[in-house]
Length: 425
Image 1 (spheres, one colour):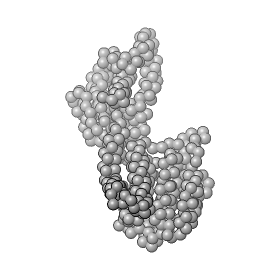
Image 2 (tube, rainbow, N blue to C red; image 1 turned 45 degrees about the vertical axis):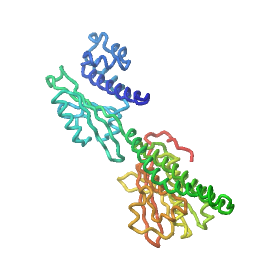
Image 3 (spheres, one colour; image 1 turned 90 degrees about the vertical axis):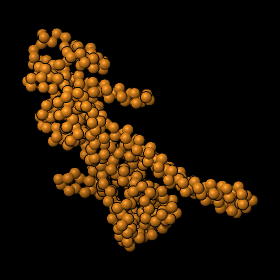
Image 4 (tube, rainbow, N blue to C red; image 1 turned 90 degrees about the horizontal axis):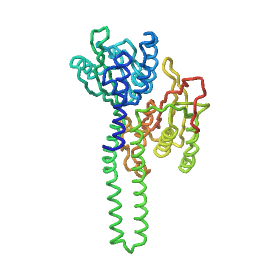
C-alpha cells in the first residue's frame, strides 16, 4: 500500500475511533476496554484520564458540563461527518462536518428528514438487530455528485433509560476525490488516445514523405514542416485542455469560498482579447458597472471569460460586434446572482446542436473548429467550472440571429461584518 493510502486509511480509522470514543464518553461508557484503547491510540489517554481522575469528588452537574464542552471541542475537530442516532433513527449528536454536508440535520429529528438514503436507513436497522458493524454507500447528486462510504456501528448503552438498547454511530468517509481521480485517469487515456490518433498519423505520414520522395524538395519540405508544426501545436493544446478539464472535475465537488470581482476579471479579459478582435475586424465592448463579487477562484473564472470571448470572436465575429456584460439579478426570495453574458451577432447555431455544445469534443462544424485551432473542449471546461462555482450555464442562439452565452453565479455574501478577502484581479 502506498504511503499516502496508508496515511489516509489511518486518518479514517483514527477519526472513527475518536468519534466512537467521544460518543461513548458523553454517555459515561468510557470504562469499556475497546473505547479506552481507541482513545489511547489517538494519544488522548492522558487528556481523558485527567478528566476522569477523581470525578467522584465533583458533582454530576459539573461532570456533565465538562463532558459536554469537551465533546463539542472534539467533535468540531473530527474532519469527517459523524452522526449519532438512537434506536428510532432520531439524531442525538452531529459534528460540524455532518451539518455542512446535510444542512437539514436537526437534533431530536429523524435522520430520514435530512438523509434520504434507503441503504443507510436499512443499515441502521440491521446494526440494531445484529449488533455487528456494517458498511454501505451513500451518494448525493446535488449540487454536485459526491460519494461516501458510511460505516455504521452499535454503541451499547448499558446504563441508559432504554434498558440496554444501543445507539448507532454513522461515520461518513468521502470517496469523491478517489473516484474522480480514477475516472480522470480512464477518461484521459480514452480521450487522448482517440483525439491524438489523427494528428499523430498525419505527422508520421509527413515524416515518411520527408525521409523519402521529398528528401531533396525544399519547397515541399517547408510546407510539410509548417503543417507538422500546426499539428504539434494542436496536440499540445489538446493535452493542456484535457489536463485542465481533469483538474477541474477532480475538485468540482469543492465549492470556492473567496470573494472575486467578476466585473474586474471581465474587464481584464476584454483588454487581453482586444488585439485578437481588432485583427479580425471585430468590435469588442464591455458593459459592467461597479463591483460584482462572487465566491470563486480567479484563475478558473478567467478561463471561463477567456473561452467564451474566444469562441465569440472565432465563430461569431463575422457579425462585427461582441458584447461582454456583467450584471446583478435579484429575484427574492432567491439569493441574488451575478450574470456574465457574452453576446455576438454572428451566424448563430441551429437549435438541434445547442443541447450538446458542452459535451467533450462536440463540434457544430468539425472542419471550421479545427481550422480555428479549437480542441472541442472549451465549453466543456466552462460548464464544469460553472458547476464548481454552484452556478449554471445557459446558451441562446438562432440561425442568423447571433449567440448569447450566460453564466449565472451566486452573489458573494460575507458571513461576518469583517472586510471579505478579495483576490486581486
